[in-house]
Image 1 (cartoon, rainbow, N blue to C red):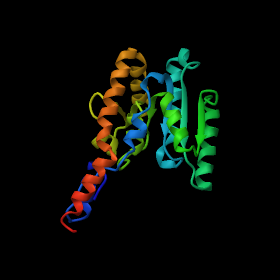
Image 2: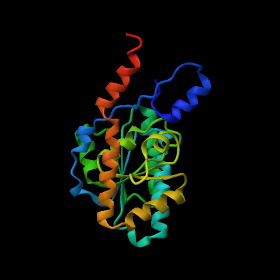
Image 3: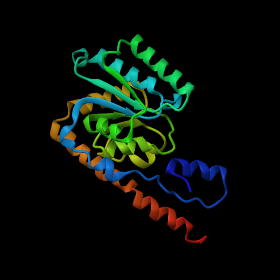
Length: 227
């Protein structure tokens, strides 16, 4: 079993065996209950473990570039970076990100929140309006699905699972470099509130296909020929 079309295509080249695509499960009920009415459009959120491959540094450069182009927005927009640290290496990585935020003059607009409980993560997602995902070639991207289910408009990296499996037309945006992210971010901010609400509803509905029930069915279908 493979967890995305992107992974499927690469495994086909490496392994001459029958492959089955089974998308990972997400807690659609818990995320899907978050009210859309409490969204703060100027709050951007990132949801990922504090690991170098998640490329949080790019998120800081995106915010800095956005403020350089739209200085009047610097007092309104903020970035919340939520993630977990597994060990000392992760903590050192987090420290380097905080240092980068200071050097870019973003310390007053960026909050790093570490090792939250699931309930607290939901509270942060409930308030956020836009989500950033910056990892290149992520096999699936469960964090992007969680953003969509929570009614957060995602801007994900234009590669891997987010591009091939998750982000469809009218549910979110894809970008490859800092300038593209800034362009998508500005586009979302320029939308009418009703347009942002429509995007959030569409994203939530689309992401429900990654439910635990659908995962269970697909998983058992793969085993039917063996059991």
